[in-house]
Image 1 (cartoon, rainbow, N blue to C red):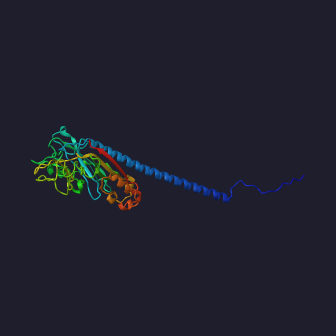
Image 2 (image 1 turned 120 degrees about the horizontal axis):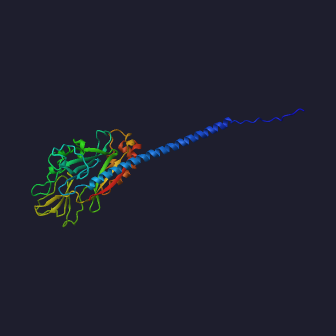
Image 3 (image 1 turned 180 degrees about the vertical axis):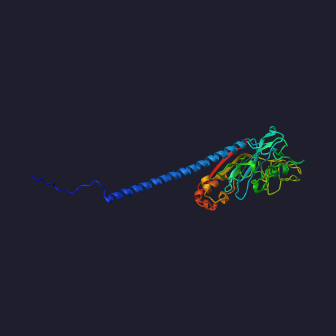
Length: 363
């Protein structure tokens, strides 16, 4: 018997060319999408790492400052120097404290004469290790109780007979050449570089303000609204270069008046307004309740892409000039679209500048 096999279209288990092209296109889209997701995650991770680095350094620096300031020597004959540099440069501070420090000179009288008091300071400057960008340095100069090392003993304020105004060589500013070298550059230069150690290699700007006893924030460590009502009560004198007037038959100042020498940045308190025999005493930190320190920090990765020697200051991070904390204006500056251009640095670096502020009570 003959069998007939009915014919038909033969079947195939393969893919057509169109199907292959569609599958490849879908795969390519999936790969691109995954790459974008990975890149976004990587950028988020890097940005988070930069924020973490900045946060960690700010915390470390502020903790070190808190320890030094909590041990600050606050007595009438112990000087301090909180100097407000102009032209949008970082401020500096130097004071006596029982904080840790190094003894750089040899004391022939023996280690038993090493004192518990140190000269502590903070400045933003470049050094041999960081020549391209400024860093925060801490001064820790150990002091002796004897004259075995004449430049390593505490300098106490002394006054001439009949006056309460300290002699210039007895102040930190007047004795700067003997202590550290040179006062040029707003007390940021020195020849004794061994005393300064890098504390914050990411800190590029520091500004200091003062919380006064009347609750106001000021650029000067002295009350400009002295207690009492003019003309019968104390008043405030802002002199450009002169120290307080001690002789006047009809003085306009009274007991409790304040006098501020803008040149030396030193304040005085009138303790006696006797005719032609006024007595003025250094006010020190008597009017200061707390120190307000503001830092600008830029992470190490971002610093690598900015031009060497470029300072993160200028008008973009201007000096404090009002009763408000400077952190407010700095935060507004770094979020402004013109911030990178004003500094002359890449936008990628400018976007990573972070502002930190802490208030340190002076006990």
